[in-house]
Length: 487
Length: 95
Image (cartoon, rainbow over all chains, first blue to last red; front, side, top):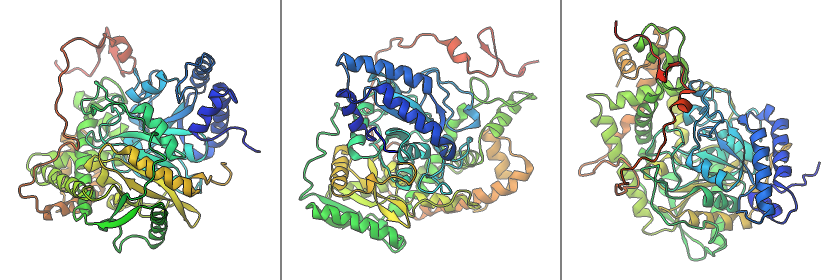
C-alpha cells in the first residue's frame, strides 16, 4: 500500500498549511499505524487516541483561521518520563504505574500551546536507567529493523515509534546517551541539547545535573523544528539557561566549507569496532567533500567518563528517587507493619532490579566515609573531562565520532555483570558530564542494522550541529531508509 | 574493594530498601563489581582541581517572593495511596 501522507514534520507542516490534509486525517493515520504495529513493537505505554483526535480538531480550526505555527496539528509522541496532565505518566515503573500527572511538563505545555498533537507516551527503561529498554515494567520495546533485537535505551520507545513511522517525531531524554544511542540503534536522528537549554520542569528526575530532554525525528530539519518549540528559559527550572529565543533551522543550509571537525583520539583507538570505524570514516569523508577540515584532538580524560558517570548518576538518582516513599503518590505495599516497613517494602516492591542497584550504589557513594573517595573525586574528574572538551573546542568547530560501540544486539541477554552493559555508554556519557549538546544521525548499515554518527557541538551550538547534520543528510540517504514492513 | 553483607544491609537501610536474604549475595557481587570499576577514577590526578557539580555554572537568580501556585491539594491527593480529610494516611507512628 502506498502511503498517502508525508512522514517528516516539515512536510506534514506544509501539507497542513496548504490544506493537502487535515490534522485529524494525519492523526488518525498515525493512530491506526500505532494500533496495527505496536503489538509487535511495544513502543507505546499509553496511546492517547481520544485526546489526540480532540487536539487535532482544535488544530484544524486554528489552521483554518490561519493562526497556526510550525507544529500546529503535527502529531508527536513523548517519552513516558514527561508529566502529562490527566494522562498516565509511569516512567516505565511499577512505582508509577497508576500515576496520573496533575500537571504538564513545561515542554509538553509548550507543545500543547502550539497545538501539536500528542499521540501517546512511549516506552523506556525504568526511570531512564538502562540502554536496552529491557528494564521497563511494561516489557522492552522492540527494534523494527529486527524485532529480536533491542531498540536501545533509555528512550527506546520514542526511537522505535519514529523509525517504524508510528510518529513523525518524539521527545526523549538523555542522561548518559539515552536519546543518541536508541536513535543510532533504530536509524533515526536524535539531539541531546546543551544542559539547561530545555526545561526539566515536569520531566521525572533521574540525575538532575545530567538529564536533558530533546527531540528525535527523521531529519536534522525536523530536530530543529521540534527544538524551536521546546527550548527556552523556564523560571520553574532553576538550572534553565537564560538565552534569547533562537531559530535552530536558520543555518541548516550554511556552507561548512573551512569548518574544522575534531576526532577525539580516545574515540578512535584500537578498541573501536572495525565495521563501525569504516562507517564513521566514510561519514567524515562526506564532510571533507563539503569542504570541512578534519584533525585529531587529544582528550586524555575521556576514558574516565564511564567510571565518573557511574558514580555521579547513581548518587543523584539515589537522592532523587528518595521521594518514592509510598505516602503521597506511587506504589504502596500491602499491609505495612509500621512506617519503616511501608517505606522499605513499597520501594523494594515498586522499583525494578536495575533501579534498586543504582540506588544502592549511589547511597554507598554518598555515605559517610566514602563521599570524598567517590562522589567528590568523580566531580573533580568531571571537571577534567569538561576541560578536555573546552580545550578541544579552542581549535575545532565540531567533534565527531561513533555513537555506540556496536549496532543493536539481541534482546534477553543475561548481563550477569552490570558493568559489561555500562561500557556501551563509552561514546555518549562524556557529553552529559560536560553538559554539551550532541546528536546522533544515521550514517550507514552494518549487517543490515543502522549505525549512528555522533556530532558534538560547543555549548549552545545546537544550530551548528544541525547545520552539519543537514548537510550530511543532503548528501546521503541513510536517514531515509525505513525498516522492511514499516515503511 | 569488596562489599560485605553488612555493607549491603547498612546501605539498604540508608536507602529504605528492603533486601531479602537471597538477593544479598547477588547484590554484594554486583556492587563489588561496580565499585571496583568506578575506582579507576582514583588514579586521576585531581590536585588543584575543584569539583564540578553542574556543567553550566549558572549565576543564581532570584524571583520576587510572591505566590504563584494555587492550592491544589485535592487534585494532588487523587494520586495518593490513602488519604482522609485532606491528610495522607500512614501506619500509626505514636501509640
